Length: 231
Length: 133
Image 1 (cartoon, rainbow over the protein chains, first blue to last red):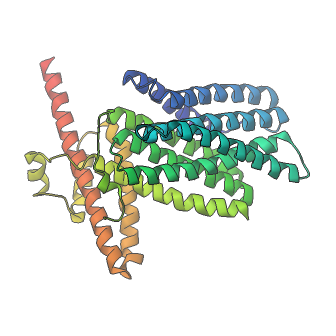
Image 2 (cartoon, each protein chain N blue to C red):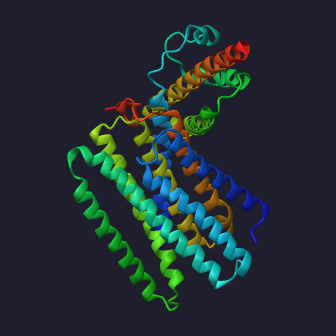
Image 3 (cartoon, chains in turn brown, cyan):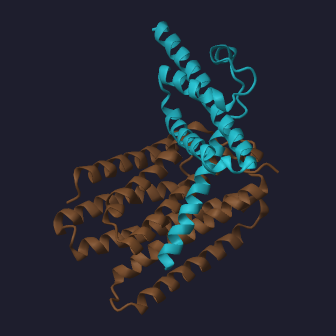
């Protein structure tokens, strides 16, 4: 069973996820951010399901491993869809949405294929390895895609405050998650999985809730101030 | 090897996104015109400078909190601390970096001044509402 600190982090994260869904309904933005809401609702459902499996099978069981890594892979896929929806919004006015979706599907298929190829080479061909590898690679692909989206936002002079801050929070989240997964792979530090990953998970709904609450859809910022080096 | 590469790239992008996130927070409040009251209290004439930051943070601690400010202020104060440490160490060797850091620290101070202004306005409104009841 997880300790009191891990349980507390889980409860705080769940509260932030619920807060985002409630705030987006309150600010009449639920349908606009439907993939984000779907992601947090699925996160809530997966937390409950993981806890149920944990209580019945224990943390060392195969059932819990399967549940944890497969639910994580599904959540990563939904977050990937949320990221693509941000691409569609940024490039929507340029009528590139259709190409963005096609590229996203191709990239997803490529990532899944690459993950399978990596797992197939190892001696232990456990299907949990595939889920773990897919999650890790999708976080990294998500990070690269968010970086490219951020570049496009700067280039296009995007001024929508909400969109800018949502993309940046997502970039922070993907970077921290990709770093955590990589740290676990090459350093095998268990406390990263137990504490650091859930803490990082708390920050995304918190940052998005603050953004939704503080800024309306009409809020604009000066794009020149976003560039670190003045042009 | 692959994991180490992913870790290195992720840490660099984490820093980059953090800086950009803080800059977006500061940019969102850059259009705010400070009230005369805050100018009088802080002694800021037009725009806040890096030197005003510690004084502004002390004033913010005296003023009751606004819940929506908390995350932004926390992020910007971490950013200010990073800038402060970098300015006192690496930036001493690179004069151009020094000027950029000074500009960024002034941005942090301006963000804190806007937060103070909003807190004062929020508390005044709350007091007025309470007085009506």
